[in-house]
Length: 262
Image 1 (cartoon, one colour):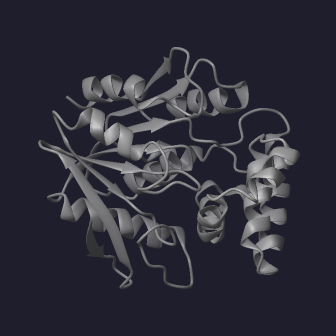
Image 2: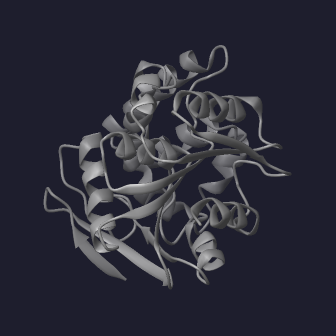
C-alpha cells in the first residue's frame, strides 16, 4: 500500500498491480481495495497495464476531511493520477463511473474513460425513488446509525429486506458499517437528492474517448442509464457485455477494457 495527499490534506491509500501504462480504477458505493471488483480487474490487466486501485475517501485505509464536496473527490482522483505519472486511462464502475465522468469533464488528465453502468435515473419513476433514497439515507446518517444507512442502501438496490437483516449478524457487517457514512458521497456524485437524472451538461463536457458499458443481463433500470450516458458524451461508444449483471465478472470486462485502452 502507498498513500498520496489530496489537495485538502486527506491521505488517499492506493495499490498498484502489473506493469505498463497507467490505468486507475474508481470504485462504486460500498467498495474499496479490499472489497469489490477492482482487485480482480487489476489482476486481469496486469500483464499489459499498471493498474492503480485506491480507497475513495472515508473508506478502507484512506482518510476523510469535512466538509465533503464532490470537488474533493475529484481532487483525490487527480492526486492518484499524478502518482501514476501525470495521466492515466480511467475505469469507473457504478457510482464510480459517475465520479470518473465528472473528473473527465473537469479536465483531469484522463486519456481514455471507461464507464460501467453509472446508476443515473433514466427510467420512469426512478428519479422519485432516488430522491426518497437520499432522504432516508440522510436520516439514518444524521441519527448516527451507519448500519441503518447500509440497510437503506441495500434495500434501495434491490436486496430483500429480510436478507439484509440477516446479514447484520455476519462477520462482514462491521466492515459494511465502516463505509456506511461514505454512501452519502455517492448520492452527492449522482445528484440523488435532485433525482439522479443523467447530467447531460456534465457528460457533454467530456472530451476524451469514452466507452460506456452495461451487462445484457442487468435490469433496464441499469441499462438505460448506460445508453443515455453514451448518447450524452460526444463520440462515446456503448457496448453491452454478454451474460453480465451489475456484479460484473473481471474476466469478462478486462478484455474489453484492454482492447479499448490499447
